[in-house]
Image 1 (tube, helix red, strand yellow):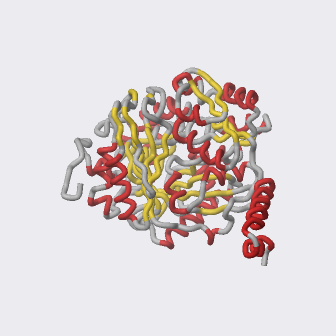
Image 2 (cartoon, one colour; image 1 turned 90 degrees about the vertical axis):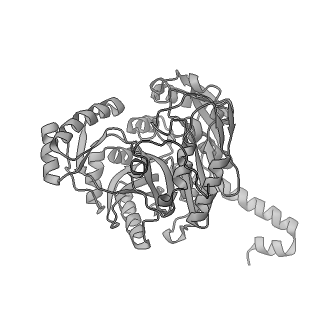
Length: 489
């Protein structure tokens, strides 16, 4: 019998003292960082700070002119102004952020998602300055950041890949030649891209030529890189991704999948974990291939391997996102793990809190809806002040946001207001919890997409799990015109 257990039986006061000493020793042995800088804004900055605070780590915010009065700035222990409102002059300004690190003495940087989160040059500069990057190493980030190179690496690691051309497409004529060899329809997509930008589907040679010009121009303006790849377009696909966690001690785990099929303009709107489409065997195979890919590039930290899955459960590698995903809360809800904590531990050279695959649990079902300040018909951003704002609350509801009443939705940044998630023992209970939460969400001052979200989650197709990446286009071919009431709503 341990000394602590024995003390618990003999003397509650002695038990408390010994237990406190053990906790202090464990915290000392597993010390991470004293101070981290969060190189991001909005809800993800608030999210990272929440875990840092729980771990006893002080935080530094960086902010632009537009964000001077934002919630995340107030929540940080310190805040440093890094530039004007445009992200190129602030959140993408590496020199200003490196200067903020030097001024505050931050030992590590968490990049959130977007901005500099997948910028290998930024990681390289941090390493040169002796500052830890709370994310993967520079070599892994660079390898997975190039869509052409990552596909080659995935194939060599034994990961299923979509038939396509493994190289740079020279011009439109070359793209047509590749398309006719693969077979239509095909997808043209930016090599250096993500987030749905620089992507076009083509069904004929003429469409390939037109799409090549449009996609390469968009890729150049969004990523500064005109290179495209061409691959087979999977019809009626589901977008299903596997979360991986890795530390620097050889531990690599895969977590239950997230389905992100409901999208608008190739950007996710509703996500859920797990997927209605996968069986245990397919889930295991996808997880093992995701781990194999992570190991092939000596990956550490959190990352996500995205797949397209057809109606027969054939799955194909899409890309690897070398950062924390927007939709990570639903994985946390079904596994009980804190992904930000795991990232911080990995960056500090500590093992994951769970190191055995058999210990990863999948508890119930979770669904996330992204609440945007936008017209749900045309998906155009709505800019303005949140004149009234009240988030839903409850034991099965989680709302990740970075706003409050009076906050500004700025023209300079993504118009996402929050991520509203619900968890339940079954999918139907999670849908019910999310539906009720959406009904209780109060937002005025800007147009928002809650009516669309509510319509989707109350639809028969969603309830039956009949989703695909074309869900919104198929169910709202002329745009969303308003929530349709029925006997249940």
